[in-house]
Image (cartoon, rainbow, N blue to C red):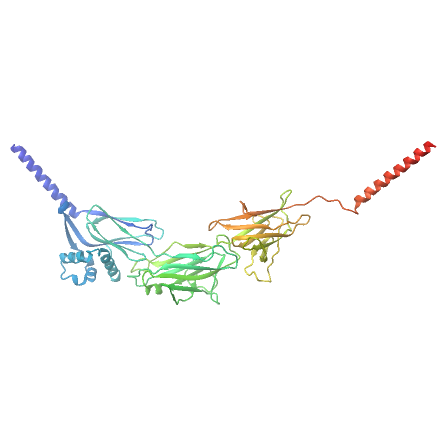
Length: 511
């Protein structure tokens, strides 16, 4: 019995020692903190900063857990600013009590935001306990910090539209926190879905005033790039893009946007890249206000289906530095369509040159509108482009002529620069030796996506997007007064002569 009691006592002592060891281990252990982003966002162009406000020790278990706090000297000055007169002395207990009072009654997020703002405004050399930066191509939606000592942490992100921060106690091997993580962005829209050559497209770029707290020199620049089928509408000198800017619904004065080259230097010759610098405007605007930028571009004869306009936003994403991030391009495609016609012989499907066509618009009832003969400019044999000025009397025509060979591997008549819609193609003169079409052909161009479209002939879709038009030729019909009549007359005379000769012979024999 005595041995059993001694063994039990030894086991109890061992258990107590193990418990004390575990408690001591917990007090000095480290954990993993995972930061997740919400709402389908990523961490691109952002920096996640982690600040340890208090060191923590943990003892006990279950309902008897005890937490000891020691304020981090690095962030005392920021805590003093945020807590104000709640701090009556500099003891750890007083700092703990002040933070506890500041975060109770659902005020935790308010305290987190206030601390982050004060930290960003401090303009000091205060650095995060740990941080991680992500480039513009990052697709990560979470990040993990390993080996963090147990403590009370503030997690915040920079490079976002507004301050994103959260308070979290790391007292277990693994802890996570969720942040919204919305980075500044812009959206571009056009006032037209499809266009004719010569039309002017109005583009609108919308954004939101970001939180610039902690930035001495916040950058907010819109970069816009056109394809070769578009030209900016500029000032009379052709050196600046005309823009209108509204912030919070109110028009603000801005200098006309600069044309720049790839090195970012202003150029005076025509270009398709421009930069609009709104940095000063957003620094003095209210966080969250809407930004609306409007400007125009004209469609030129080089326009194709993929003609597009793309805009990117360059913005500051790390307080205390000159680092910037850029958004992915926001693109708007304003397609203009080609029409290819394949004029062929109905017998052998060989191409026929010399057929003349005129293209007409349609009425609202989708019938030919002969007041809308479309004017084109000639780009070469069999190649035409919708005239940018449909009222022009010089260097335009409504008469288009087919050639003998394929153009760019398609038909033998090519028209570029048409918007989606209904048209009527009328043959005005057939090739020599062929019959002209009796009726105009209905042509329908329909947009199916930014880069796809359909072509239909008389409401039947052409899978190859080429309108095949056949011409027929007939056999020679008989006519009066020709050689045929003379032949028939000669034969008739011979027949009559034969009858007369036969009659005379028969009469002689009878005598």
